[in-house]
Image (cartoon, rainbow, N blue to C red; front, side):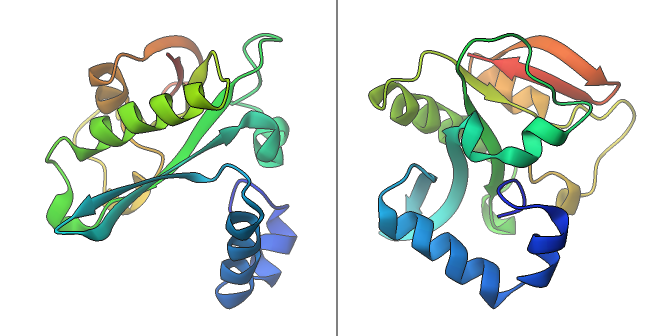
Length: 153
């Protein structure tokens, strides 16, 4: 819900309130993302939906639209520790692109981290890493800040 709500609303609903709000979106049938499964159980998540579903992107000074083209946005991932550094992010991105295209998307865009020096703490990697986006065939199209490219496929 981070990208879908104003900061004050997100903070006010933090925890159960945001879970309920997201459940309503899922129940409505609106696009929300893709899941990866391991041993028949949900194991990881990638959020993807039309950019206009994420109003916080429109207010971001570093993630402004590149052009007037309609895009779908990959905004976040949840990958448990045991599945990190296994290539799962790139596989989730492939599934997200496939899903978005089935919904009519022509361009899928992401806003990953691109650490300029050393390792980044996993807790700050919820938007993904540029290297995984590259592996999934995304190309950098803009950079609003040193470590934050806008990548498209």
